[in-house]
Length: 218
Image (cartoon, rainbow, N blue to C red; front, side):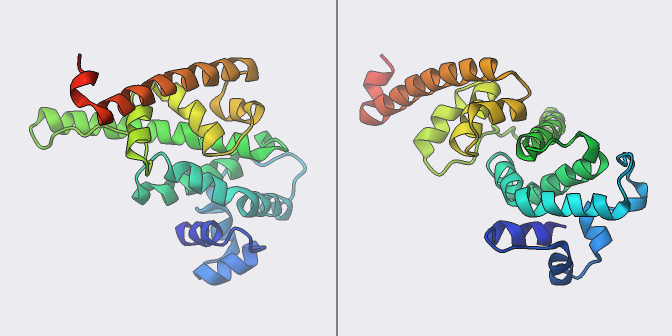
């Protein structure tokens, strides 16, 4: 599954089909379509044949796998990106009847919840290891090439940071981003407005520190 996702991510303009991907990665279409044993996956939509379900999942993979993978890559370590992306499409397979016509916000919402669950588990493990004296805790943050922007984003709450990233990095409008974030468009617009104001203030502080470290501490 991970190899197939990387092919889609690195060649988003290619008209991939499930048959072509399965040939490239050397696994069956059935295994590729769900990333697991399809016989164990529940949630079949009433009236949908197995072939129809596979075609619907194939369309979701081809259309949105690259965007889901990019979403994950901006939020978690590189080694976890393929696993999270695979989990998203396993959920999509199991809940095809819940996937709306505008599927990307729904898929990103799944990714957000999967990542949150993973981060909670990682934080618990890190805290335990720290208490046992095995390692020092490392702050979690967003992987952003601009160190000043990354520092400023790190001062925001997780909700504010996610709102800005959904709009600025993932390219969603407020309505679609609200669906991915699990809130109303009105609430999301207010969140983005506040987050932008807070980010601007954090960037100003960061600039002041770079220009005159002593002045920034007065």
